[in-house]
Picture (cartoon, rainbow, N blue to C red):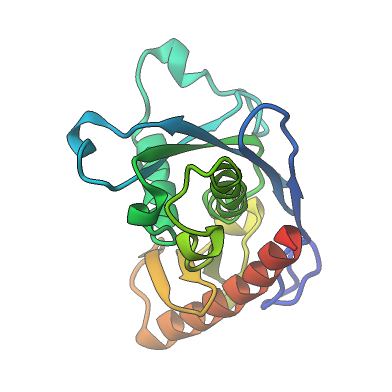
Length: 241
């Protein structure tokens, strides 16, 4: 069955990474996966959380949020509700874990970098777009530290691997890469794959939305995810060159 936007099953949506989109942060990237757009900013602060002081290690963490009208209907701001939702917590933690996998925290020194990932427009794959864009913003923030001689090492050594992420799923029995919203809500199996630039896994999140699924489908989805992350790693390299 044809995909809503006419892509091949193994084809990413058009991907754009625009560096320096925001003026004030030490790193900022507008990442676009098709109609999904996420603004990723990296903010550097001297020092680390109290529980990490004296360790000689830096810290990288993330916060994720969606604008009220990022989707086809308006959602209330979580700040107005007075509490952060479980989904938001889950995605924030995923982004933080993923980005810590690419940083030598010792070489970072006792500095902290907070990655804010704000969804401007959602059409599926917001968390994977956020991870992919946040890597580039983080790299720029690390470079900013190096330029001010506040880094215990060169940026290439501190950022010792790249990290990207993509969604995959089974729709009407077919394995597809980088799901848009219409595919995501119809998926029989839904999965997010986070990979390094060399194809190693950082994290895999997957579930059978409509029941169980066989090992053959899992293998097909992982192969798709690794190939998609490799393409995204190349897009990251081009954006940073």
